[in-house]
Image 1 (tube, rainbow, N blue to C red):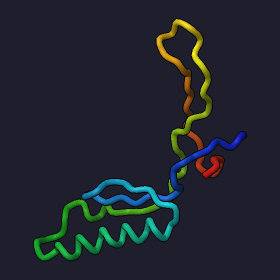
Image 2: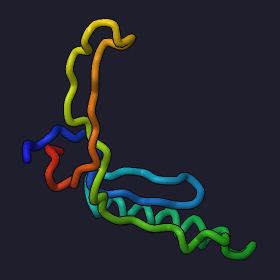
Image 3: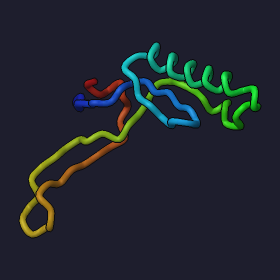
Image 4: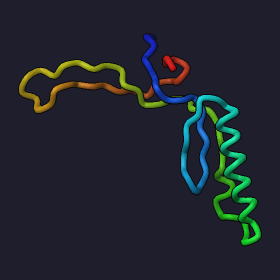
Length: 94
Protein backbone atom coordinates (compact mmCIF):
# COMPACT_ATOMS: atom_id res chain seq x y z
CA UNK A 1 0.00 0.00 0.00
CA UNK A 2 1.27 3.47 -0.86
CA UNK A 3 2.00 5.59 2.20
CA UNK A 4 -0.22 8.66 2.43
CA UNK A 5 0.95 11.82 4.18
CA UNK A 6 -0.72 12.23 7.57
CA UNK A 7 -0.49 15.43 9.60
CA UNK A 8 -2.07 14.08 12.79
CA UNK A 9 -0.48 12.40 15.76
CA UNK A 10 -0.55 8.75 16.79
CA UNK A 11 -1.58 9.35 20.42
CA UNK A 12 -4.59 10.94 22.10
CA UNK A 13 -5.89 11.87 25.51
CA UNK A 14 -9.46 12.52 26.57
CA UNK A 15 -11.13 14.16 29.52
CA UNK A 16 -14.70 15.20 30.22
CA UNK A 17 -13.87 18.90 30.54
CA UNK A 18 -11.83 19.65 27.42
CA UNK A 19 -12.54 16.64 25.19
CA UNK A 20 -9.97 15.00 22.98
CA UNK A 21 -6.42 16.18 22.28
CA UNK A 22 -3.80 14.66 19.99
CA UNK A 23 -0.13 14.23 20.89
CA UNK A 24 3.17 13.37 19.24
CA UNK A 25 4.27 10.97 22.01
CA UNK A 26 2.73 8.53 24.45
CA UNK A 27 4.39 10.44 27.27
CA UNK A 28 2.58 13.67 26.30
CA UNK A 29 -0.77 11.88 26.10
CA UNK A 30 -0.29 10.18 29.48
CA UNK A 31 0.88 13.42 31.10
CA UNK A 32 -2.26 15.25 29.94
CA UNK A 33 -4.51 12.45 31.23
CA UNK A 34 -2.72 12.54 34.59
CA UNK A 35 -3.02 16.34 34.72
CA UNK A 36 -6.76 16.11 34.02
CA UNK A 37 -7.13 13.47 36.72
CA UNK A 38 -5.19 15.65 39.19
CA UNK A 39 -7.56 18.51 38.38
CA UNK A 40 -10.49 16.23 39.33
CA UNK A 41 -8.69 15.16 42.54
CA UNK A 42 -8.24 18.82 43.48
CA UNK A 43 -11.99 19.29 42.95
CA UNK A 44 -12.86 16.10 44.89
CA UNK A 45 -13.80 17.83 48.19
CA UNK A 46 -17.07 18.58 46.43
CA UNK A 47 -17.25 14.93 45.32
CA UNK A 48 -15.92 13.09 42.30
CA UNK A 49 -17.13 14.19 38.89
CA UNK A 50 -19.42 11.50 37.48
CA UNK A 51 -17.27 11.19 34.37
CA UNK A 52 -13.87 10.86 36.07
CA UNK A 53 -13.60 7.27 34.81
CA UNK A 54 -13.72 8.55 31.21
CA UNK A 55 -10.31 10.23 31.47
CA UNK A 56 -8.01 8.16 29.27
CA UNK A 57 -5.14 8.15 26.81
CA UNK A 58 -4.05 5.77 24.09
CA UNK A 59 -3.06 5.21 20.50
CA UNK A 60 -4.93 6.22 17.40
CA UNK A 61 -5.27 3.07 15.29
CA UNK A 62 -7.09 4.37 12.23
CA UNK A 63 -8.13 7.74 10.84
CA UNK A 64 -9.96 9.12 7.87
CA UNK A 65 -7.28 10.18 5.41
CA UNK A 66 -7.32 11.88 2.04
CA UNK A 67 -6.20 9.30 -0.53
CA UNK A 68 -6.56 11.16 -3.81
CA UNK A 69 -7.29 14.59 -5.23
CA UNK A 70 -7.88 15.46 -8.85
CA UNK A 71 -9.36 18.23 -10.88
CA UNK A 72 -13.08 17.76 -11.41
CA UNK A 73 -14.38 17.39 -14.91
CA UNK A 74 -16.33 20.39 -16.17
CA UNK A 75 -19.95 21.00 -15.26
CA UNK A 76 -19.96 19.25 -11.88
CA UNK A 77 -20.30 22.42 -9.80
CA UNK A 78 -17.02 21.94 -7.92
CA UNK A 79 -13.32 22.24 -8.79
CA UNK A 80 -11.80 19.09 -7.27
CA UNK A 81 -12.75 15.50 -6.56
CA UNK A 82 -11.31 14.23 -3.29
CA UNK A 83 -11.44 10.68 -1.93
CA UNK A 84 -10.99 9.63 1.69
CA UNK A 85 -10.57 6.24 3.36
CA UNK A 86 -10.26 4.91 6.90
CA UNK A 87 -6.62 3.82 7.06
CA UNK A 88 -4.32 2.32 9.69
CA UNK A 89 -2.02 5.03 11.06
CA UNK A 90 0.94 2.63 10.81
CA UNK A 91 0.51 2.74 7.01
CA UNK A 92 0.63 6.55 6.95
CA UNK A 93 3.56 8.94 6.75
CA UNK A 94 3.54 11.01 9.90
